[in-house]
Image (cartoon, helix red, strand yellow):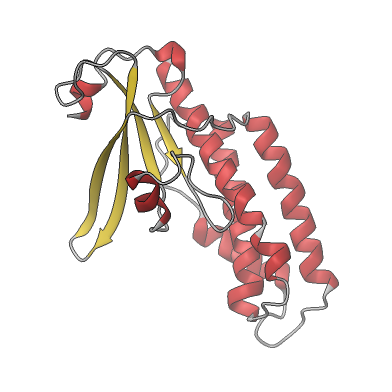
Length: 207
């Protein structure tokens, strides 16, 4: 269905696929109140937008583009996907460049690490905050990336993993939630960087 629906795609209009991630205070970039938006908001895995031509078998005869929204759901047997056809205009994506996303994450990483240390976290549980962050960053690492993924995308993914590790160090390993407002706002930067990395990689693949 997806192959047929995208057979007439024009790569000049941007990536054929787009990653959608959302979180508290950061709704998915889908039409508000739509079934797809509700489904994407109800899971923690986001969604994939596929730009489809209007002549696809299941897409009718309307002119212009439609979109297929793929929403995953984890089950005991693996991952199930629900597909929604969306005819409404989608919210404009941020289209952050890798440089912009990297700069935001770099600043967030430095501020967060300094924040952890400035609070004097030196406990038996977390004797070395920066070492714990490094260990968690290794855990979050994505060694399964295809070799063809551009280095700028891989760098964004790695920095996003590091910020995620910092947040987990404070909230889960230390168990201190007094900094939640300051740290949880960083998830927005993590999501934006991962989306930007995917966009850049797909545009690179299309060239």
